[in-house]
Amino acid sequence: MKYLISGGGTGGHIFPAVSIANALKELDPEAEILFIGALGRMEMERVPQAGYKIIGLPVRGFNRAQPWKNVSVLIDLAKSIRQVKKIIREFQPNVGVGVGGYASGAAMWAAANMGIPILLQEQNGFAGVTNKILKDKATKICVAYEGMERFFPADKIILTGNPVRQNLTSGIKNEKLKIKNLLIIGGSLGARTINEAVIASLEKLKANSQELKVVWQTGKTYYDKCKAAWEAAGSPANVECLDFLSDMPDRYANADLVISRAGASSISELCLLGKPAILVPSPNVAEDHQTHNALALVNKNAAVLVRDAEAAEKLIPTALQLIQDEEQLAQLHTNILQLAQTDSARRIAEEVMKIAK
Image (cartoon, rainbow, N blue to C red; front, top):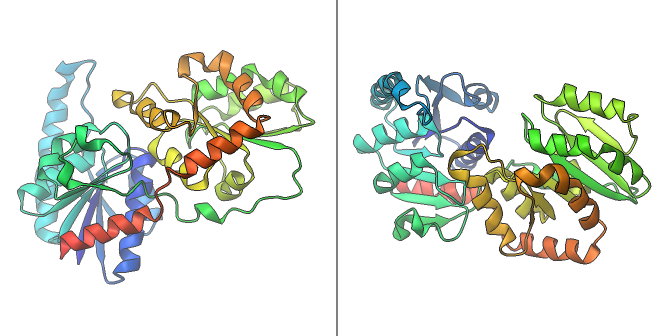
């Protein structure tokens, strides 16, 4: 069987795509898998690192603020679709899998028009533009949230959850750690608002050194600024300031409370691990989908929401109060765990194989 997988632009699209590919390989060791991505984007580096071949397209996103600049975008889109058709004629896939992003739009559109059945995977609680455009061409659509009938035909929807990093549940808890552990994560590039909120409250965090340990992942973009602020605050020993966490499973295992953006992958990980969380949705994403993701949990009392605009004054005080409230932490743990979808990558891979056959 030959599988064509496309999507990317962000880790939120790439993690699920690679997880689905890995699951396909487990179920079908003879599988031939080819990825299609966008030139210059993250997937062109991450997919080969995961051991898969990828071909890049010159496709880009539309400029919504300055529509007159979209003539060249449309030219590149037409070029990309022509290129995909050539790839499909040569590779002859049995099925296409689209996980969202610009490349996915061009690749799945071309595949469907050439008679290749396609499966879409939608990570967010508010469907992305690419998947909404492709919905009528898809055979099946795998989703992570209930209520997606408002975007897609109900008979095509399968609730599978989002695939997460394969080793996530392998973390080991340090039983010697007798104080509360707060994990602050902003993604691989970092989250400006979260970092600024921590910088503004370093003295408060330092004052709680007897009962609190803080792991602060700043992201590469903001590390120098955050490290300088941490040093200016006297390098508080109970606050660990890092640009990247290579031992994520262990960090999660030890966390009593997590502060995070509300990207689809992050939320899926928190649900699977049952971690109490304060979510700060990024306002800089299409259709404000992170707020929709967060509200799906908040409305079931499975997470706490702090809006981006209020983070500077509210985020750390909310965290300091919540982390000492055993009853609320237990309630959040129970409720978020009930929203977990396990074995998502394998379930999606099984659907892909059914379509391929």
